[in-house]
Length: 365
Image 1 (cartoon, helix red, strand yellow):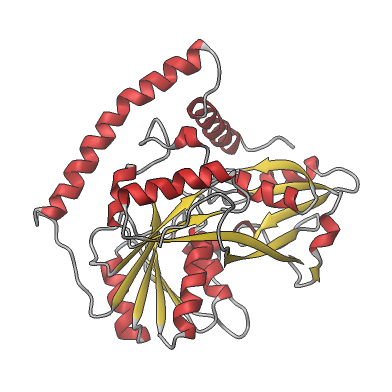
Image 2 (image 1 turned 90 degrees about the vertical axis):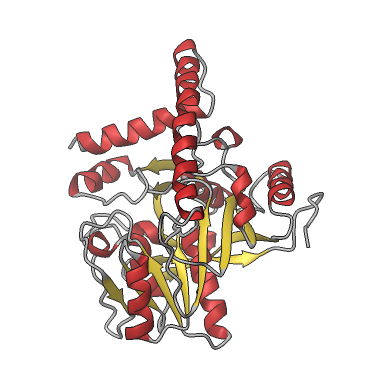
């Protein structure tokens, strides 16, 4: 069965755009990069006008009567925000704080606000209704409320009034200016190709490096898998633009494998096996590198970020599976897969851990 024309076009378009940004050879690609660079000025001007509207008081900023912590990034998705939000929520809960997470629910089909809580029977609304990240967070954080809605002033009030929240975590909140924030955490992905370190549309940055100055903390993710010189560059950017910010090195630590029926297996089964790495992520290379670090012989199977897998996609994935090949995916992708699959799937469970630093890379205070 052929793959979906829409998904094929979306995947090909994204891959082609990233190839151009990353430095694809040829006169056509060079001309496209020049054109994209010219359009950066439009993005920069719109960004300055937008931020000025808040600075001058033309746009209203709401202050809620609890602590508000933002977890976000300069660039488009793929930095590891979901795991960072989970780690932060667990830390705050362990300190005795009543936490609620506010998420926009990117990619969901419903526009209504939703309050998600863990249920003993394991039921969770489909990710198509609430978004893959809220679904994953709510299922993995018993006792912590996730409130989904575009207007996070309204969902924040609901979290306080209806759920008794004492601290709110804004998922992907660095660009959300409508709420006063007490703490800004910015994630920098050490695996992001340097060629993408430009404002949209020439690169993948929503805001320039200089805006790191708003950050109270900078978490450098995937620090162990990345080249040390790239990590050192990011530390240098933090020192230059946010000298008072705390820098934290983190890594996505694989724990074990689980299947969709609840069974588990050791990571050792990946050793020397051909593995079809199924992912719909902002930066799929991070998942593939992690599998390679576990000894897998990786065959990429990439879809757009937040992709909802259809029956046509499942057939296309099935066609790519070879005799003796394992299929591995992420927890974020697993919540978007249909319940009944014609092949076994192994989900790589991971957690965000701190690492002491990288050899040769200075650590800021």
